[in-house]
Image (cartoon, rainbow over all chains, first blue to last red; front, side):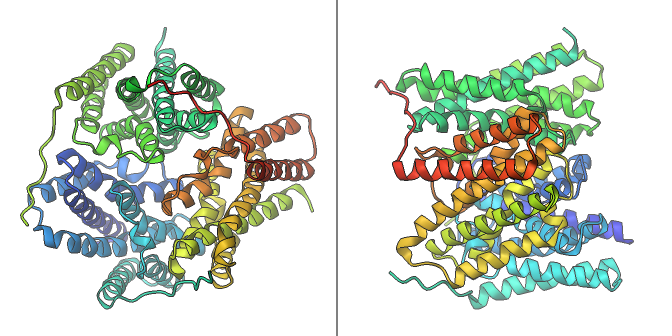
Length: 206
Length: 206
Length: 206
């Protein structure tokens, strides 16, 4: 499997994972079948559409290649039919979200670097792509965006993106670089969730 | 009237209709003149801006051709001055929205196909353009997005977009194809509203 | 200092000002360090990213030039550490927002004109860039968007953008033109705030 194939597979797995996360959030909000599929769809494709517009790849891959939209829609429909029990829905959303965050951030940072975007910009594109899907999902379902909650989120994505940019600079092969970064981001996010790591809050004098 | 003229007219009517729908929503929320015009403006132009960015047409038509912005702003101002009675405001929003959904979806799917976007991607671009204006309007006025309510909405747009893509494949002339699809989408949406068609909701075990 | 340098400096000051405004809003909402930096970041860069996508400049300047993202992140972090007292936070957000509105609108209108976008479209790009950061900030922190409140906001930006477009037509040198328009917009906005200028609201018959 060469680098391009690996990027496509990572992208599609990320699409499926974010579609499942969005669909679970939709089921928890009691949306109907189409609402659930729609939320899954935009959660899965939103980040990638943004990335491709920023790196000048039009029409975006998610529109040029039908595998993306079909993967997102089918995954969301499957979650609608076979969703987990209520008590597990919220945890499913968070775990799938962590996996998607890792995969999308790592793959998108690499894509931006390969498209000639400078390192700092590539890290930002990677981070925005990774958090974009969850942000759209939370805005549409009326939740406080996960990225603003008092947990490590965007910063995990950013650290992983920086790792990809450094590895790219030193010619680390793309596939292992991407996978390592994806696992690192996902693990950091899951540990932060389970340990309830929290960043400091500004002191407010009355 | 050739195909290009027909596309421009359909686009401008869609702009006016969505501007009126957005402005009505703004009046119902007691926004001031500028707020009403602003909501009308972004509801009318949001979908088309998105479409043009995705199919690589920059600067987007709504910015390159002043007819678009003037149509949107004037329509919204007229609605502000001569808006219907309170009781009819909500119905006006829904009916105008259905007309805009049909016109924008059909015209945008056709534009995307003509710009060389593959069929599946063109249908998605058409659907997103059609629902984009209403989504922005509802997010800004704090309503539950119409696309997430338990009614047929995005799916009506998608079916119409698929009809356009199939007709395009079989060389159906563009103008009648577009008009038929627009009427079909609008009718399907209105019938779904009046008959209260609802899609299934996932069963939740406690 | 030639025109290009002046545009870059105006852009960077606008980025810092909007980052400070977004970060103050984040502190007021009790977000943690990363949440505050993230809000500052997207408030500062959101408008410019939008502008560059619309005028076809990819990758957008904010991603191609690391000064932008570093300016935004550092400013937000400084505000997190040395934020003003609670009672002054809301006023800080509004004043910084007015300054950013002026700088971004003037600089972006000029950029769009120089990129060959027609005058009406350039004014709209300038206005959207100016209001974009505040809109994102308010959507993410759950406030009613400042542009929809009953005060002069988008219309101040639009008037300034029109002034830039007229001056550009008559070959007024770019740097003084941009600065004058920025000061004009900011002053108009501050006066509207302090005098509580309000636009009319539509009469609602029951």
